[in-house]
Amino acid sequence: METFTQLPLSYDPSTKHTTMPSPTPALTTELSALNTLHRALTASQSDAQSGIPPPPTAVNPKRSAQITKLRESGNTSFRAQKYGDSIRMYSLGIDMAAGRPLWEPSAIAREELAGLYANRAQAHMAMSSWPEGAVDAKCSVELKKQGNVKAWWRRGKCLAEMGRGEEAERWVGEAIEFEGQEAELVELLEEVRKSLERKK
Amino acid sequence: MVNWIGLAFPFLYLGLLVGALSTFSSLYRKRKASRAQSLAPWFESHHPRDVYLSLIHLDEDDSEKPEVPDTVLKAALLRRAQEDVQRVLQMRNSKQALATLLQRGSIGDDLWQRFLRAEQECEEEVRDVVQEANAFADNWGSFIFQSAHEMAQNQQTRKRMAEIQAETEAEKEWWEKKRSTVQAEFMKELDDEAAAGTTTRKLSSKGSDDEAVLVEAPAGASQQGGGKKKKKGKN
Image (cartoon, rainbow over all chains, first blue to last red; front, top):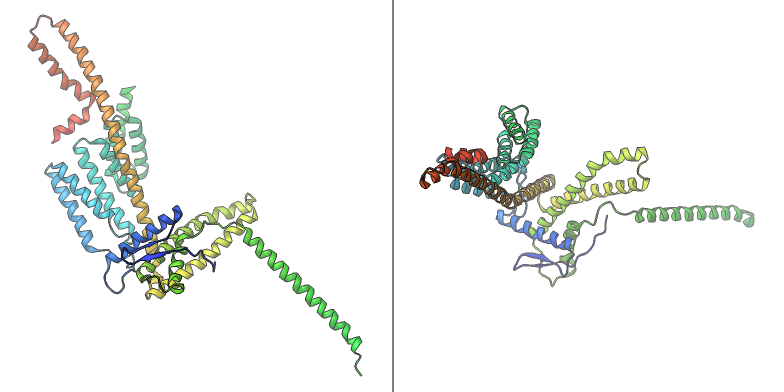
């Protein structure tokens, strides 16, 4: 454990990159990860503590406020039936939430992203873009499996609209396992089953 | 008068005994060490650790090269901590299963030895990282692993999201294709119906015939692509 492999690394102060001659693929990814992290760390703080991420209890309140604002303006556009605008707002919000510094609490980013994806799914559905809606709702569910009935329902609905009855049935069944007997989900499941029978 | 010759025997005996024992013990230890060495390591080589230590030693042995700033070292340490978190979690997850397998005799003692050694190494590695972190800033050692854990989590989330979002294009393509086939089928049905219509309404004028088709279209459409029409109506 006292030994290590000395790598012929060199640091270039002008580009602020650490490089080495002819690295292996694994080392290439490692070095690029290091350089990205270094850039992120130095960009976020300018004080003497530079380079040390703050403990993962505090978050940058500015970013949270911006994300909330984007979501709200997306909601407003949605209510005004400007679905294209609302999708754009939600997408900006998603980029913003995904762009949080890596060392900030992951739970917060997940929560924000889950909400934004679910909302964007709804806006896509309003425009009858079922595939996009289905993908966004899946993202939301992936981030937050419980207490996310709307996202579960939305993907189920999108799948049903695209005529993927079996898939929709499976999906909604899983949703009920996670969320319990929610009225909305049960209703959708019945609907899906009925249309499946009609097809037969 | 001391009998030197008589006294030499016990000393000779003692010398032989100690010599034999020490030879045996050193041989035994060497063999044990070599056996431990021959066991394959549990993990692949620890790249972040190599990078970090190489960067640290870069300053020492070459004064010509530009000095590596502290921020790079800190970033490298954070990368190292991240890899350690992953390893510790992996070990914790597999320990129970491995112990059960060992009890049942499903795995050999070698594997268990390798695991224990890796565990020990991990512990030392963690301690080392904490020390290094504390050297950079007061108290950093107490939360560097928390930060590293969040980083790993965040990276995983983003990767997963990118994966799912990448499905969008394929899904859209599939849907376009499906919709066009559904529409084509539907148009064919319409044509058939139209043909039937012309035979039954041969007497009616051409204009009204077209109208009949137009009226029938939405009625049929609401059955095929029902959802679409319904949603459109809401807008």
